[in-house]
Image (cartoon, rainbow, N blue to C red; front, side, top):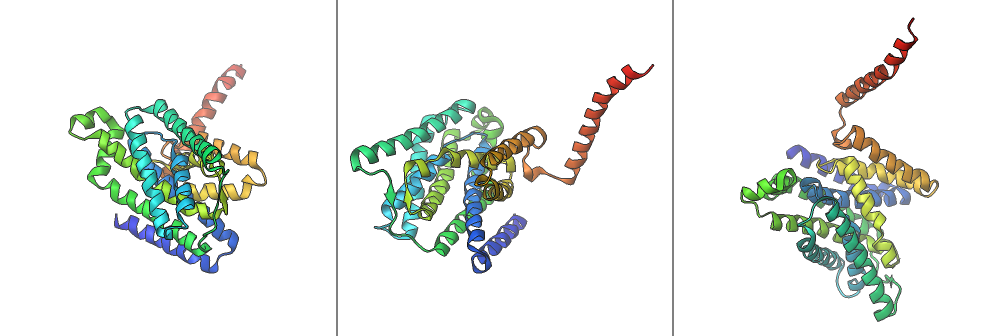
Length: 321
């Protein structure tokens, strides 16, 4: 635990100094890295441990963004962040109570369906009730305030992962991921544990959404409830290693670099790169990038040799006189 804390605070110190010597582009890219680091780390805290595949990240992100946009003129900056986190956690409690009895594909599909339901409900409310098509943010903090807030949320997400994984609550979630029925037999209140973990990851997503909403001067449901935010969070966590501590952070940096270099100039190449990385990790690195070791390359080399031997061997026998 001490080593993890030292690494975390060392990385946080480097990121803290970046706005003082980095360019606008470097700070913008770092902000994207920190956003996805916070989202994927908090997602992996619950979903990677319990093995519940949630696709509701974009819903919580959008709820936090809208809460911040509506309340920022009346409350302080930190009040808006707390409000976004609180409303997202409350929605997660209601949603979790309704769907967390399901697993696998059913749970994933239902969380995605509820995300779309929330997005369309807010779109309908704005068009039919308030007569607007989005929100213009007039009260916007400076760049460094937004950056430091998202940095703090990313550090808090990783710190929560370090603490929770070593707590009774984390052990209960790990037991649910291994065998939920056995954990229930041993006295774990699986329903409350799952709802609590789901609300925790939603609170982080809502807080990040509230902080990132001011990055745009205008937001609408299509922007902040974009399913791509949720899908990319899941991909980052899975490719980095959802059950690991540092995997989502490593993958967030890789994905952010790919996004900045490829998405605008070659969007199809970017999407193909995401798909290729996911396929390669599922087939050859199921533990994610965080499980990559020098011995892994030796195992890959042996697999390639065995594949080549099986491919060439029968052909050589047929060619022999």
